[in-house]
Image (cartoon, rainbow, N blue to C red):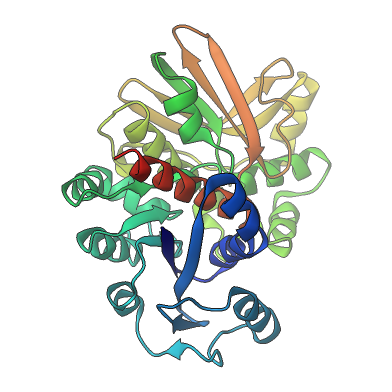
Length: 340
């Protein structure tokens, strides 16, 4: 069977996913018996293409690298993203548009549309999963399709899969984590002597922080990820508004130096335990598993009954890293559909 893929959202993650699909097409065939065509791409500002016989991936990547858009692509169409989903023959829709934590749009509309059309969905968009997880999982079940979202937490580092599959049989009693790479980068730079504003500007220059960094530095990005972990792994019914959220904007250079004098660090820690989720800067000692988690690296500790505390760490952002999460989810869908 040849799978057909549509990519909705053609920013860094969409392009990273397409790059992996292009570079590893032969390996996917030989190792996983996974053959595919990319039949559609919908980009808000970069243009959209549709060809149900398959677009030329290499030409598409070269065009967006050279021109910054795919408007001049031979398969360019003027359809909006919903029309692309409806008019493509895709049986897997990759949804990687930017997150809106208040409404979940436009991602929620994309996902609902695809699921109702009996198309599998892989998303890296945190908003729809945090806001509408139960509804979307029921919709996927009703339409006999899969909804996967590994890339919503820790990018390509498999936190969700690890908890569900790697820790199967354990009761997870608490989750703690450094879930936002931007704030961790800023705090690392402040330890090295930078002032907060200088560290933030450096994070923006390197692409870790957006022009408007409030979702990161005020803790909301971590809060959304904490809600996803609480719902998916611990089965808790909490919303973003339930999370007690404090960012790093009031952390001073003196606070950082005081922590270091005490042989420790200040980190923005997410904690999910029982019915409560908290995002807040915390002092941790040098013996803590998170003590050496620096720059944009993320980490999660799962506290369990059988294994005690288990910590994983890895990249929490990046086009290829998040694209890897998409690929993992696609391969998971293929394996699960073959078992039916």
